[in-house]
Length: 180
Image (cartoon, rainbow, N blue to C red; front, side):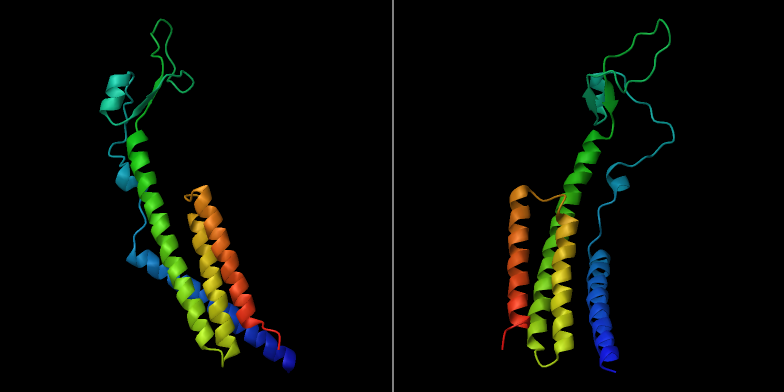
């Protein structure tokens, strides 16, 4: 009976941790829309004519690269332009900028929600199951936030994230597992 009770308790803890983090992330996706690539770089026609000179390319918001590796094939006797045009250069950079801002804002929101949940978990010291579940849910929220933001973060920010995460984990371990 004792083993069954432990399994039930840990099942509830894991369930609360997972469902609370799913709740955070799905609610966040409803409240704060993720940037969509097609909004920044709409594909309005089925036939795309790629400019074959630098001026026309830049005029359309593209980036000209002086390299023949990706240039289109030519017929015998046809003059091959030196370079190629990346028509989605400007809109892709705008999308990447919007994406980084979105990732940063989601990171901040999830860290704040995680910190609130860890703090609330400490108020439930009378109910070890709820206290443990909320503390673990907060820690998982930090992990999810860091994983989502990791590719956009600078190296210094990554070190700060890891330092804060380590401090929070040590703090939770000290609070939850004090030696009597």
